[in-house]
Image (cartoon, rainbow, N blue to C red; front, top):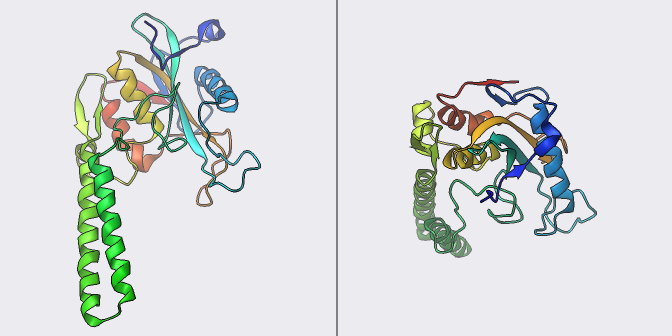
Amino acid sequence: MKDQFLTTLGRSIDQYPLPDRFIMMSDSDPHPLCLIAAEDLQIHLKTQTEWDHNFGLSDDTKRVIIGKMFGVLVVKTQKKEIGYLAAFSGKLAGGNHHSKFVPPVFDSLTENSFLNNGMAELKSINHKINELRELKSKENDEQINFLKTLRKEHSASLQMQLFNHYHFVNNSGKEKSLNEIFKDASYKNPPAGAGECAAPKLLQYAFQHGMKPLAMSEFWWGQSPKSDIWKHGHFYPCCREKCEPILAHMLSGIDHENI
């Protein structure tokens, strides 16, 4: 049975030799196999009608514009098929699950999840703070300070709990939580959004389904945030702050090189 997230490349890659080690793009052009995969994925982004996301590539100015990083991982299956997996960073069109894209490492959007319940509690604390601010008094100021401390502690606890739900495997099947990975890499804490980038999603799915990674690249699609200089359709290396410690764990024991 064909894997629902695998897009086979077929004869389009016959002229390119398969890499003898895993190739991960760093600061130069993507591997030819990744370029073929990315071009195929970009056609899908232009023509699909399943979901609606405002990348800022149309005249739609009423909705928030959110450009997105996409990744492709060329793999060899246990049946010797050559194809690619696709992933997006964060969420796409407000969701985690879409046809053609591998699932998240951990789905934080499930109904009645600890995260949704925790965010509801934070919202309640914020509401109480705003109510007290309207009733100015010294006693209320003390209550506000108490609630701010409570909010900070609750937010930190929720973030730590979230990170503990992200578990990453490597090629040998060894599993580590996000907190363990960053602790072993001598980081104080994982940054917000760690584990939601395209590259870890792709490797996680490949390892869990017995696929051999051959080459991986990421490209930006849509307008760039004001704080960044990403350009539509351009390729970029995996981010260092969020991904480097995770990828160091996931690629341990695999012969690989950056190009």
